[in-house]
Image 1 (tube, protein in one colour):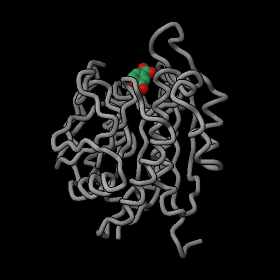
Image 2: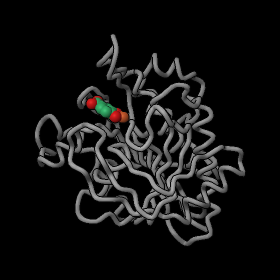
Image 3: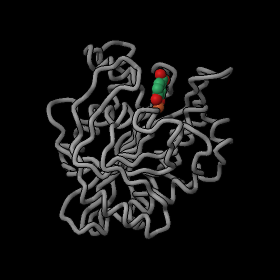
Image 4: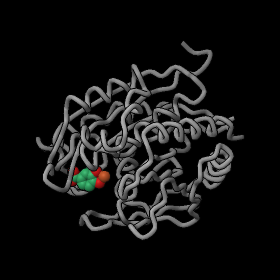
Length: 286
Ligand code: DHB
Ligand code: FE
């Protein structure tokens, strides 16, 4: 069976794509953000996952307000990146893993999650930037399965439901008849609000409590309604739902999870950024 090796959460601000294109990683504004990644890249170089299941939210590129699935899973051999209007460079296409995609779609529908399966799917900055941040040089050595969760148009799925979805994804990964190694990635957050009277809103105390909960109390944030999450983390801060899905996937078969690395820095653009890696302690290892 496939092995789920761990999870990574990261913010996905479009401006990161511009900074990478201009080689600004060492500039004072950007360095505290980009410095969060080398320890995670080292872990990836050692553990060498074959596939990444990426929980992310499309921002109006592949799905627009006229057709907005709550949960959608890519089942394509390739995912082309495009920019939905931020003026950032287009990144290389991502290689798919349709066999795992269909296994996930089948397993989730069996578990009564009603999934939209997408045999064609473009991916925006939320799916492309994490890959570029994790593998800045050359071709990506991983295939991806994008799992898109609506955080754009109300009604949004509840935190508890998203955590349960993640849990079902984690269980399905572990029953995939494959010798491959899989990592789960959460793309989004942390607190930010791009629009309205509270534009620029950031809540550091909440973010830090949320990051702590990923280690010590992973279902903590599922107590909150969507409106409470908007209040605490900002309209776009609800992207932290992706982190709940990622953490749910790691909880799936009840393994122990160890924090490898964590970084928090604000602001980048309008957003409080975080990156975190959690490793599954495999049965039989210490
Ligand atoms: C910003 C953050 C996001 O999550 C996003 O999708 C777009 C923009 C920002 O802070 O600029
Ligand atoms: Fe976003």
